[in-house]
Image (cartoon, helix red, strand yellow):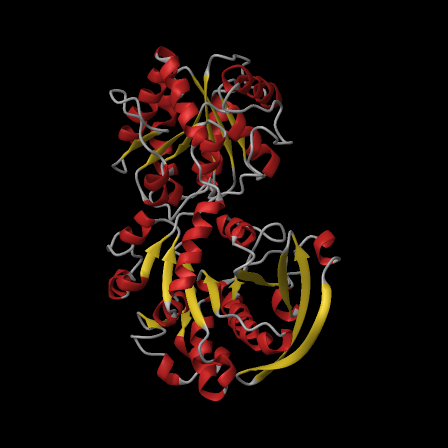
Amino acid sequence: MKQILFAASESVPFIKTGGLADVVGSLPKYFDKEKYDVRVMLPKYLCIKEEWRNQLQYRTHFYMDLNWRTEYVGILELQYEGITFYFIDNEYYFSGWAPYGDMYADIEKFAFFSKAVLSALPVIGFRPDIIHCHDWQTGLIPIFLDNFRYGNEYYRGIKTIMTIHNLKFQGTWDTKRVQDITGLPSYYFVPDKLEAYKDANYLKGGIVYADRITTVSSTYAEEIKTPFYGEKLDGLMNARANCLSGIVNGIDYNEYNPETDKHIARNYSVSNFRKEKVKNKIALQEELGLDKDSHVMMIGIVSRLTDQKGFDLIDCVLDELCQDAIQIVALGTGEARYENMFRHYAWKYPGKVSANIYYSEPMSHKIYASCDAFLMPSLFEPCGLSQLMSLRYGTLPIVRETGGLKDTVEPYNEYEKTGTGFSFCNYNAHEMMATVRYAEQIYYDHKRDWNKIVERAMQQDFSWNNSARQYEKLYDEL
């Protein structure tokens, strides 16, 4: 029986700011329970909903040195859907209204968390064979582990995997301060270890010391070896290329299932979507005050509203696109300029554009189920989960060929009658617009072909089963 510990800063259903939480919360359920005992360790944030906090069972507590400080470490536990979740408790670090705040505070918070994860192991009686670290917040775990094994035999032989969900976020702060927080010896703070461009860099340290590195799609694993996508770490990525691999994320097929989804107006399946799917569109048009028309092509957007997601492209051509026979439904929050862009077009074209500048899980399900196409023109996308959800609901993704989007969406080929969506290659607003208009043309003039694409899209399998098998293979190699 192999013992695996996931260490991460967020996980559904407890706390979520992005796709990382979906991965950490869903993936452990899909491992072969006979061979792998997978458990998860998270911070116990004050902002976790009370219904969850009340279910946590106190296990134990102890005090831990963090350089010159002595900190309380509480350990709580919860069994959820067959998986053991441990929560590290310390109110000084994990109070606050959100899991992340100022970088200044987060640097210390996650140094504490990384050390506490390792210090808690002997106390809870679970010695993992592999610690699977996710993103920069757990980047110090492989370094502390390297440091611990000199003084303590218990830690020798534990392997680590570092999974990069987004290379853009690295956790950097000035070296002196990080040295003061962590108490790590100065020989870790050199350019071939923790230091990058005169700062201490958590993610870099994790990448240098982990036994294996993975990203969340194979195209992204290749892209980050280039200067454009490498976020100044492309040299390191090339140096560690022999330990780097990409495993595409999945989504929870029980939760995202058009046949059983509780959030949508009308359930449907691959056998009856031609009649039933459109009823969701009419219900959403009514709910959002758009023109009621079952024939109009509806395009959905569910996203953080940031540059990374390609909104500067949309900004260039949205006015022009609104001249077409389409409706656009957007959901999400982010940079003020993009929030206001959607508000402006919703005001200018009230029957055509709906701007929902908030986030809601039920509304996202309604958009996946109601729209005909889903627009995701990302500048870079390590994996992307939205396109997997839209494929599942038969809403055809229109994407830029980058990272996980390239790996999961097969562009429509009208001659060979293959493909599950539409894609374009260059980061260019008019290339995107031409692709949207090509999709409109197929939708309006070749409805039978369109429905065949929907059928293929809904038959794709991006459930976690496939990814879990690949992670198991990785664990076995280690």
